[in-house]
Length: 318
Image (cartoon, rainbow, N blue to C red; front, side, top):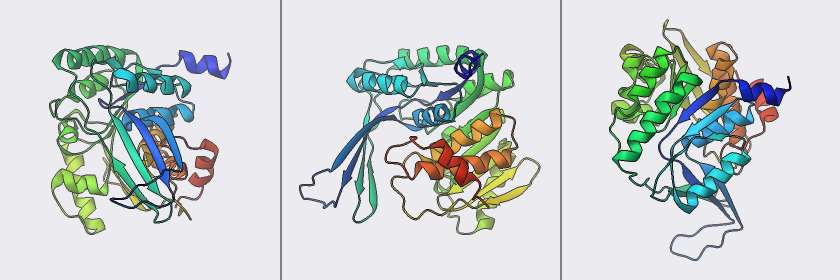
């Protein structure tokens, strides 16, 4: 059986996130507020945390499908992009137009500014359809990945039934979220909870100035039900705390130049999931995830990294 045929018959990783986006990335030589600014390059891609994660998983050769709420002309563009990325789209159609998010990159000042639209309310009937269809998909999935916070139109515990169902089928569950949407999932004992330092501060409304402060809040997540917790800090050390109270520090490679870090956290999630699905230890999975996230920061559009570069960067992680 060919590799492509083998991938096609494997169970797919299900990536959930309610709010996909059509991503526009604009590059400027310089950018001045209250002035006319002419972009030198404009790139479009399908994005949103779940879509970024799914695209990165596909880049790593993993069978994956992505669920979200999608509609309108922007939604049709997203579907075309997902097909080009070799990502199976199981988007729930909605009448509203999918949001468009814009990243402004100032090459001279080396600044990156995000303009994020709020996702439209799809209506109660569409949300129920999303819930019903994706709970069924979990019966045939290999893992569940939940990415991002929830929009204002959905209840804070919206994702809890998915995690409960996944655990009933003994599926690995990886959560990349924070605040109430994360806290409502912890009682279901997800396999890995990943968030960055700022998200951890927001979740527990604490200023975390030292490693000991961060470890204290990581232990809270373990106490509340998370089996393993990973905290990223960009170019600084990433921390891992396991359910047996084992603590690790991982230092990502240093980059001479960052092109666009948007989506690096999602690529880190994808790298973790990829290795876990290959039965590799969690510490190795997190190290590979950081390599994927670092490789992503060297590319102009989210989740469009070179897996061979990620493999080289993986060997540089301490």
